[in-house]
Image (cartoon, rainbow, N blue to C red):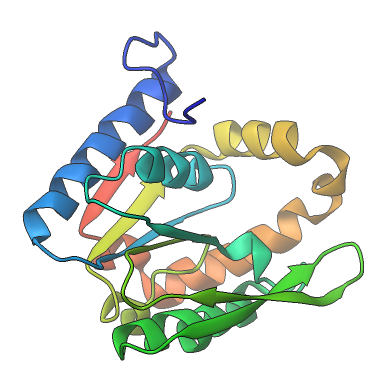
Length: 197
């Protein structure tokens, strides 16, 4: 079953994500590249993961596409910047140089690194997560997406998704997102900005 939103959906969030997916697919097709890199940034609950999954389901190029979620790299609740640094050095830089990248999944329950994963530089790559769009990562990517959504909607979606495990950390994580937005201005680095209700 596809995770892409239904084209006939009356849900405004699904409609917004479907329109965003269509625009990104068109941008990828226009690149004429075999291994493009797409970065999807936005605050918690904005719709990044849903958009990334929909994009992978509708990927316009032949062959496989790799998807990495920064939730698998952040080393704990204070790790937004560290997770982005790991993604940059272990995934994006090697991919840009034509080298295999290797990253380790963060085990949130054990609070430590887990198994390793390889990233093939010959294949397209989608990286999604809060903080991923910075001046440095922008130069290592082809399509850059900022997903914007109102705070009440984002919080409701994030807590519905992660429940009580996330609730105590919402403000703590939001402060790291604030710092990223002030420092990196990701919406200005984006090639595409999408509003999700």
